[in-house]
Length: 488
Image (cartoon, rainbow, N blue to C red; front, side, top):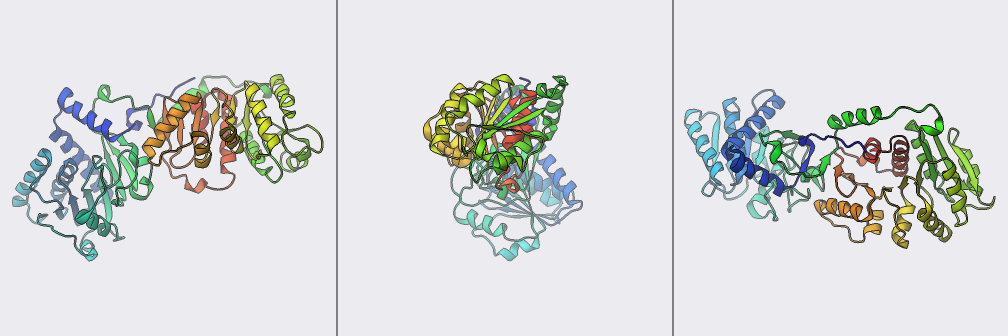
């Protein structure tokens, strides 16, 4: 199997892993923390200025940790670009982290020389009215970074809620929106709703999971000089065209296109029951669209007219008796014999239903099946309900309900869910593509998360299309990473 060489910039890091990388860069590599902060602030201020085009009235919200230090440095850089900057020290300036303190003093020194562009508010005991924010065009969020691990209350909670209200205020969060978990993407009570999130040095898992879609806005990585040899092997990656296209080229170049249709990828789709023949039809059309050589549907003979009415390029084969309208145990060997005669990838489950005969059919069929297999929809439900073993190296495509049926307890926090999917895949020796946002794809070792908003695909039948495409690509390239990533 060809494995993608994914750039470090698309590895996903936990808050703890990022903190360790930062600490090692300082202690082992020799770049001090203040220098790292200055580089981060320079890149953030350059990004903001390039995006805004010209100076705008800016409000900077600061806590007291290193995230505040980043924000103070950004405020300094923007004031030098003639941005009128107001810095609000929401927790005062008396207990800042060492590097934040140093940046606070630098800002005050610059204020003496450049007072027209810098105002520092250091005596904030309560949040202002919402109208206060109307005086500004952009807001820079430097209240809390990825180290936050408890619910936000009191004065800060009020500041965040009011800062989120003005529609005209464009907001930039530094590293992560304040109030969002850097690991799970869940909210600690309340969080800044950013238009842009400028991640420093690493991509945080929390910016691509949980509730992050509501709060992160457009997410951008600003590189820091973390040496690659100090970066831990996260084995969790963000799917992105920048590395996937190179991977796709390598996969497609690795094999020659056979001339005979039955050597160019064969897919068998096993599904359908009364009222649910549309699911395998959509899956069959999706598989055919991938360019495979043949798509065959062994269907209960009584359902054949429904398939004939909607499919032309795909082969339909009746199994069982003319009156059979669902799969039965006695159909299993008939279908297995056909697959053995012309091997291919099997997709089982779309619209297959939950009839007792079908459940028994599935148990017999999967125990004897040795072909590459994609298991979807009701077939997954039956496997979970009836404790049917999932064949080794199968690709399973559960939605959240089916995942719970298979796994039992499903964690509510997204970082824990990612680990649970990884552990489940390792234990069952299968490849799991857990649908939802983000999509989680894992083989028990490496894990991939989708980076785009897939909410438009939350429609009936889209799962059948996805499963069909996966089976089509898998039949041609025998590479689950490529097959799944290409499909999603």
